[in-house]
Image (cartoon, rainbow, N blue to C red; front, side, top):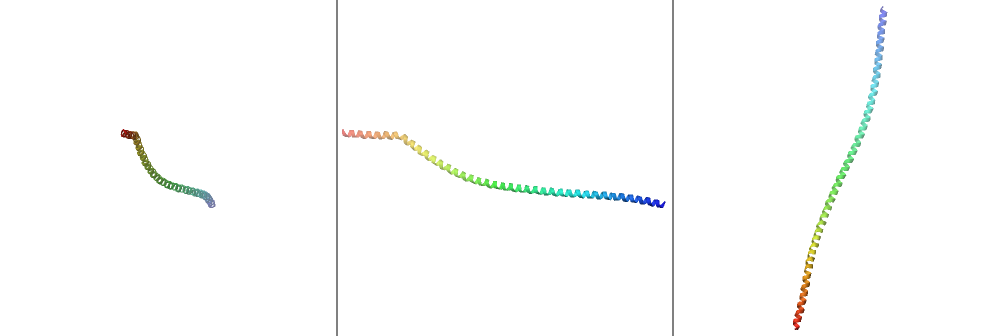
Length: 142
């Protein structure tokens, strides 16, 4: 009886040990799978970080390029503004010169128009003077 009880206890212990060993094997397999999954996640995370870093560097390069373009546009705009100001001054001076010239031409035209109006009077006066002197000569001869 005692032997049978010891064998039964031994068999139960062996079954428990076998079950425990199976559970340990299953846990080890699960741990290995978790380590592999963790390694895959870590590699994926590193790849994402590299991608994100590359995208960030590309965006920073674009921002720097846009800032350079903006600064260039501001410089060109300032230069064009200065050139426009200079051109405006030149045009204003030219406009003033042309106005003065036009005023002089108009003054000369008015003077010529007055002279033209007085030309018949001057002609009449010289004819009158000629007649007068002719009359005086005729009177002087008589």
